[in-house]
Image (cartoon, one colour):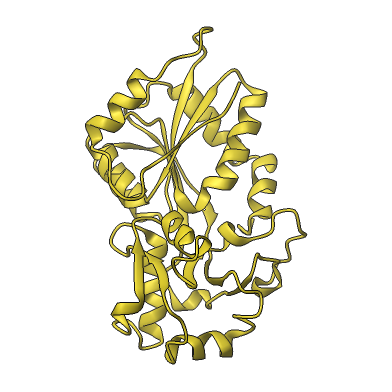
Length: 273
């Protein structure tokens, strides 16, 4: 069955009612096969698509993926958005949803650990850590993109790095902020910003061999990977949601997410296993 992907609008946030209505009114397969609605943090969209396709190939379950910021999904789930599974970009959101009764503790685990990258499409721009830090300290760029720290864990991590470097409030006129790490990436990819803090998984060359050491990974353009001790851990948690209409399929998908097949896909995108 085809994999359906719903990418949340980047310039506005759909109301919970609109999200619910869209999913509830979406046409169902004529075979009445179960459809699993999975909310995926923007940084994990590419591996999630591959994992979902592999899961579909092995089951009779159709997977619909919605991609956006963790903070927006968190709010939508609280207001009844009909998702079955939530793959967040942090652990806090899932833990709070469990405490509030919106997610199931027994079907909750860390599925990936993310890594932040400062990225430029120019292969010669970010050659090493010294060059990257000097570029930031001397404001040697026109625009820098990052995700909103209030709703996106990768945005909060980027803010941590800038705080560590003493640049938390530096050059406000040169910053461009997206509502998710996906939008931050698009700002740089489209040329609206010349550098930006993105997720390593968004820029890694997945058809190349992935090394275990940070800067040895092959990326499009050039990138600097800030030391992970400079920002809060990007432990990304998954959970089945309490109001899931397809709990059996949701459990199966989460189990598949922990399989060697899924882990191999994640490794290609730079998520250590």
